[in-house]
Length: 531
Image (cartoon, rainbow, N blue to C red):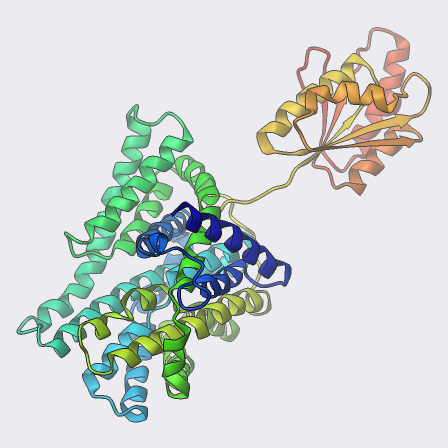
């Protein structure tokens, strides 16, 4: 088990970084390395970890769904009216119908089996779509009209429709449905409504535990409670008919709506957990792809998948966005945004074969083919087309974690005032993991420091990323120039006392000049360490 974890983490990380260096989404590298090291290729993954592959994938999937809920923008979704509701079923239904017709006439299958294939193929992958949409939100693409939020909300609901209808047609084919057809059809809205209700209650419970009780006193406890409840929702689906993926996302959304401060704290830490979870999710999805089975689907299987996407998904998405404020390019992007297949197909693609359904082996082959031919291209297309088809808007830091790389410039001259400035800058830098630019300007012998002297002063900041710069010139001009050159966020300086005329003149000549001309905020630190 430990060997398998090591292989996944190291190779998955390296493959993701390599894909990133090539300008591709990192998950493409992780998917491909999963296929290569999986049991159907090199077979490097131990059986012990493959035995728990499905459980690990589900757990990492709930992490990203919870994270998505913590960033949903209610105002943007509501502004689009019924679009999100229509996206919850129309694209899946139309794509399924087109796939079923194609399977019927290309392969000659019966209508029930053709529709069964359609319900497997139509489901978009939350494992691929959710992280890609969150990435777009973090970069600002499409946020003005809430396009990533619409894809997230509609896609999660449509998966519930697809999985439920798959169960109905499987029961119909195997003769287990009996007289329960209308009961199971009615179960679709029940699953969605119960998913919303259960998620709402879980979100309220999470906030009560984290805010009103003494069970949590730090952000790690918040994560334990949040993910624990999300895991409970995942398990609870076995006992109550609700959409577990939708419930998990709603739970995060409720926390965001009720307590934005708590949501931000949890979201920030979830981002760190996802760094590892992402590697496990995509490597293990890749490991589930059987290339030999995929090849059995042949050109006919590829044609069915393409027809379903190009015709079915497009018609369904355009029908869903009819009458909305989206322009033509944004509608085309919505089609691309939900084209990736992976999660549902990997989970249920082999069930018909296990149940003895006619053409079950071919259904599995087409399911596997759909993963390999849509997940990597879908992730790439989202990343490639977003800057070309979507408008870039202002990122809302209350809905998404914004990563800032801060730089502080500290002007050092060996005085106790400068030393206090370095102390305060170091304290603030530790809070935001900032880099320090330590500048010494040689103007006269009083302000000049040797490298050894400056390194001695820097002992207080030795645990921080820093760069030492020596330069000549007028201090005020050199400090402003270096601040611009290195793109610093704040300039820290010691505020000299003004007990005599010379000190007042020096303050006026240097500090006042910087305060008047600097484009960056300047923080003056007094001898007592107060800004």
